[in-house]
Length: 436
Ligand SMILES: Cc1cc2nc3c(=O)[nH]c(=O)nc-3n(C[C@H](O)[C@H](O)[C@H](O)COP(=O)(O)OP(=O)(O)OC[C@H]3O[C@@H](n4cnc5c(N)ncnc54)[C@H](O)[C@@H]3O)c2cc1C
Image (cartoon, rainbow, N blue to C red; front, side, top):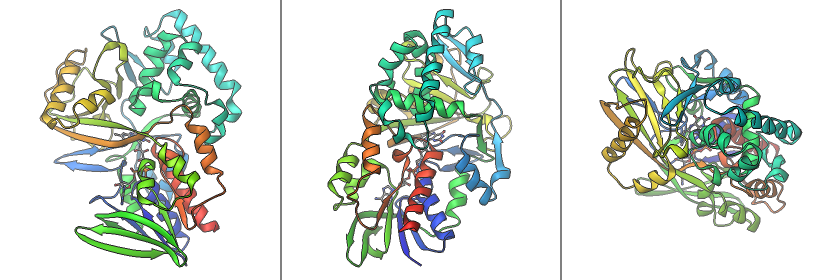
């Protein structure tokens, strides 16, 4: 029985620890926050449950569903009560449905010409189908040739880019499409084409990490300061309050956001250090609005705000369409600020962030909302950005021959910026430890 320390109690770290423990290993998770879950975590505010990070799962998250079955949580999976989305164009909200893209073709969102050009993207997707495995993104490294904005302008034209694809990507991955690659777009479309019904757990998606954390020993409030491999094992130093502690383990899984890894591991090999130094996360702010009643103007789950509409928001998620997160007859929504606005208001009081959201929504057909309470979450590392050139770097990292002994890595930056991908990275790190 090997002793393994997992650093980071997000879905990647918890999934890894859960798998190792089931294989009979002695595992402990060190998590710096006071609660486990990382970016997949819920918190309770009176009668409301707020999913702080991840908001939804999908029917295509096969690994997550398989683990949920083993955790006996599969009975708690619920489809969202509203599946449709809407996009703002010229001040009007045009309904559509990401899991039924043809609905967008019937809508007035795009001109006939723009709809016809979309066929070229379907052709691209078909042409590269064999190379596109969303859970093995590095296999698409050869398709990573430039940024998504230029690629879309070339393939589908600016109208479909600005009013259909960019709004969907911006409001899902909370960043500008210039910061993502053409190959990343194809991987996302490939994923969506494999089945994409939006779901949650009854009471919020954070229930998943709570269930995982209940199965493994997690030390909370334990902030790791460094990890060094020595001949007798991997030594982890961490702080609990103002006390410093150390633990020696046979192996360590580093499951923190990729941009933090180099700071924790001073003895990485040059190939590893070079990779970790280029991992980038976007910074983001989410504002949750608790409402006394659900606004009649929001029959959709998601509303996306295209950049030409000039709002400070990427989109809005109408959370009260999820089961068990808001009392009957009450409303709960959350808005994602654009990265530029998040940066501008980073140190501003929460009330200013809430006012910014309310004023922006008042300029749309959604109208002025009157939140009974607002809750703001700021994420210095919100989502990893699969920028142009990232997939070749990831592919080189995964096949590196000079590996730090006794260390494995897990996190969404290794597979994709969503919970299923983060979980898969954790299960793979566990498999690597079990193999060795
Ligand atoms: C606002 C938001 C909305 C999202 N929406 C969705 C969605 O709807 N659907 C979806 O599938 N995905 C969504 N995602 C993405 C998804 O939440 C993440 O990809 C996934 O949760 C990342 O998991 P992880 O384990 O890789 O990282 P994390 O969850 O970040 O886990 C890393 C953990 O390491 C801990 N840590 C860091 N440094 C240290 C240290 N020195 N010592 C000890 N612990 C440390 C952190 O506290 C954290 O708990 C969203 C993310 C955000 C932020």
